[in-house]
Image (tube, rainbow, N blue to C red; front, side):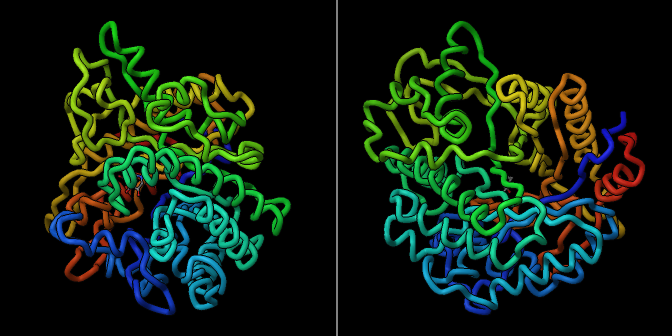
Length: 452
Ligand code: IFM
């Protein structure tokens, strides 16, 4: 069970989930600062004010990564640290933090993989319409160019967006992520402007760094059709969950069935001439985030529409997941990862793939200074084996990043869910590698999947 030569094994985090220091060195509030400080929005009122205090513990965290032997580290840059007013002046102090991070990685032989947007939109841009409006896509391209200019050729791969589905549909339709809107039209506008941000951002990075490796990370959904109506339910959800991004980014068009399914909400006239050409930029690798699958069918009778990330949820039903479940309530279906990677390879045969997130939350306990997270090791082992199956079936998979390096702010669920392979004590901020961290380090050291 060996990975191919050169296969990248790393871990991932995101700025708002780990950094803290939200009001330091010129950073302004993001939508997540405002959302998390709004009563009732997050578990226990948790916020990212301190998070893992990574901003102040950079060297310790870099040493931790080196001790695990990570080949690569996937982090995100906080837009409101770098361009505090959303557009215009670039904040040198904000950029310097990421410069120190990148230099520290390179000194330790770890390859930096930068994501430009992992959901911390400057609130000042949300106040002007956020992802509902195209100005935000234009502002993103300016910001992307500024970061590319500053970090230059020290970054190996530039990822424009992380999981635009969550930003658009959890943020503007279901209302469970920032900015907390429940407006299906806004979510479709947001999806389009995120697509546009990807295209304009990719161009802006390449304008500064013509040889840059550019990517985007999508949380592609795997649907398991149930019964006779399952295939139609899966088609509808695939359109609004996956092809709404894959279509314009990789094929230069929104899928016809998506336009038809959403015609009662919009005529998509916010898509302007030239947008689709701008969105379809060559990418060097597609980042895939995978956690679980969803069993779906059509409803017997249409239900009262209520806030949901799924346009058409009144006719489509996502069935309760069958156990065993992770602490997120998500099912464990490693074959879904194989299916997803193989089907992407069949649809886009020349596109290299990278699993940019995979992992699981479990209710860890610290016992005598250790965390024996056997469930997580089992989850990781089975998913890495599933990735190997996909490679054996032809998928051009180049690497795998575990989510996450350390426990962190799990968005609306605050600190109640632990995804890290390193435990964080939120009282002392002490880091403690779990058994899974040692297991992952052993995998990196030997290139062989260790036993669970
Ligand atoms: O924590 C998130 C991450 O920010 C994006 N992908 C899914 C993870 C687990 O929910």
